[in-house]
Amino acid sequence: MDKEKVIALGESASKGSDESFVLLCEEMKQPLYRAAMGILGRESLALDAVSEAVCRAYKAIHKLKEPRFTATWFTRILLNCAKDIYRKEKYLSHAEYIPDKGYTDDYSFMEFESLISSLPMDLKQVVSLKYFSCLSLTEISEILKIPPGTAKSKLNRALKILRLEVEEN
Image (cartoon, rainbow, N blue to C red; front, side, top):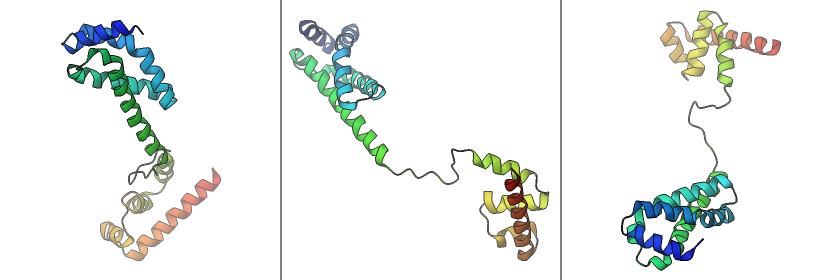
């Protein structure tokens, strides 16, 4: 990095020259990347930090008062970005993930759907209302206009058939 060039580019960029800002970023990219790698340790995070630093610097370049501190100013912005990313990554790695209700990423529900599709319609309805709609047996009996005992016996019969199918597979 050529310090005199960085100072000149910083002065020109602070006065509104977008071309000078692009050249400044080109001149600063290696030192910024190395600093980010030292803090974050992963290339993807370091690149994120550099990108964020460039965005923040572009928005604030007009606030650069002393062009002789351009490299320091830009590096300070990068350090703040890297610190933000580090905190976020630390939080995410320690945070307990609680999925949204009904969310699953293993697609096992697709297997379940294919299993219940082989059931007779009256049993399929009871299983679907119970496990997909989360209704009680009383609510299911009201919807299907059958006694609660019948709803319960249909559910038990459907589960027995499903267990047998799973054991066979």
